[in-house]
Image 1 (cartoon, one colour):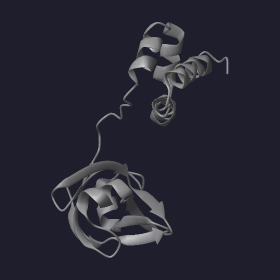
Image 2 (cartoon, rainbow, N blue to C red):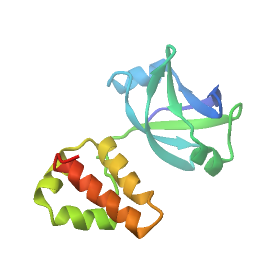
Image 3 (cartoon, rainbow, N blue to C red):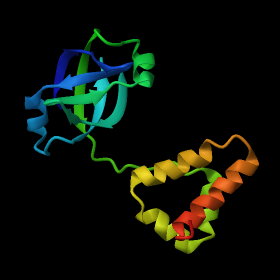
Amino acid sequence: MPTFRTILEPTGGRNVAVVVPADVVAGFGRGARVPVVVTIDGAHTYRTTIASMGGRYLVSFDAATRAATGRGAGDEVEVTLDVDDAPKVVEVPADLAVALASDRAAADAWAALSVSRQRAHALSVDGAKTDETRARRVAKVLAALRGEG
């Protein structure tokens, strides 16, 4: 589990990133896009994937992480990276879960989706402001899963 100190770098707009040393990435032995658990200053932990951009390896340091740590561009932090082998799981909204439980074909199609597609559908349902909109979005997800939309 490599640990290093670095200065958080602005990457454009309000975006900030941790630059990961190339020897750290090579040490994982998994190529450039390594899923990792990031620990900042021994306290705040989050999951992400190392990205290769402009010849450098970067880990995002998003707004939620900046708020949780009180750190931003130009600040020095201690970073610990650990390979993230945990399965990625999407929290399915309760009403969508009930609908999937009653529709085997849709449930099978859901299970075959990538995590990112599952997350997009779940966020669509969760983003609804009214019960009617939630119900429409659940129906739309089921239709898409059945190949109807």
